[in-house]
Length: 205
Ligand code: 5GP
Image (cartoon, rainbow, N blue to C red):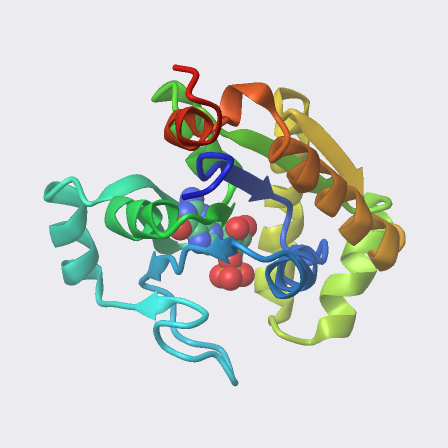
């Protein structure tokens, strides 16, 4: 039995902003915080592991899950499909943990439209120029895909005003500390108090 109910944290950022590094740090350092492994039709990159980084599936299998209503949200990003499984989120929350979702702005919008209680956090690069440099430096994508990612980044950055929190990743340590502060204060929220825990401890309903 835990003092608070598992909360949902939605993390969005243009690709190359450092979101994966930041969320990795958070998952490592905050107990009872878990990421939900998304389903994608994208090909695995070098070093990516199935069911750990993503669950890699075919377009047919993705459409089948979509039709069956298995996703809380789904989106097409850079020509590939991505979706978050409702079942995986539930399992994490029932295990007493908070869930960190690393999803794009379209996915975040879908969750907001469903009026699901969640905390929305957007990570900004220091500037568009800095983002361009990072995408070239990390050497993961070809020229065409970098140009596509930068165009999408601008559209995504417009959406940051709809989020609850904005973190500028100009310094990794500071960005991680900022996100930690948001999550740890979320755990102290009165409206997240687990009613059964409270009643068990204090006999107050
Ligand atoms: P990448 O292919 O570089 O890992 O991710 C590309 C983009 O897809 C990132 O912005 C990431 O946040 C987003 N993404 C990853 N998983 C999901 C998901 O399940 N749903 C949505 N909507 N976006 C996702």
